Amino acid sequence: MAATEIITIVILGVAAGILSGLVGIGGGIILVPALIYFLHYSQHQAQGTSLGVLTLPVVVLGFYQYYRYCQTAGTPIDIKVIGLLAAGFILGGFFGGKIAVRIDTDTMKKIFAVILFYTAFKLLHWDTQIIRWAKQLFS
Image (tube, rainbow, N blue to C red; front, side, top):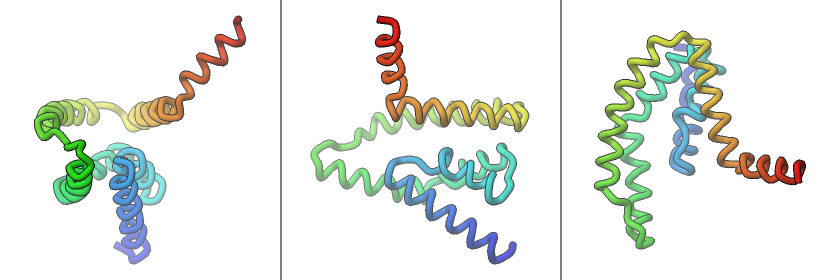
């Protein structure tokens, strides 16, 4: 592996880690596109690599910070909810992975892009703005 590639990979990891710790994103939204663009990974390679990065060391350290903060703030994180979500996540991840490897790369890119766009659309509240605009247009 060339030095520039190692530096690029480390920078991508730091950026994804910072964003993951800061706002709870990183793998899918930052790391997958970055791996495709900078390292020329296929969609499947990038998604698999992103999932590999989200293993215990990264998750545990980020969770620990939020856990401590929420305990101090009087809004503790419910471990039972985490357990139930994790059980569903394990099943969903297993079956999602089985489905994903059967889908061609171009279709995977489109599915990924639609999910990112939909997420941004909802987070920016563009859906309610468009509904308001349409109601004004037709009233």
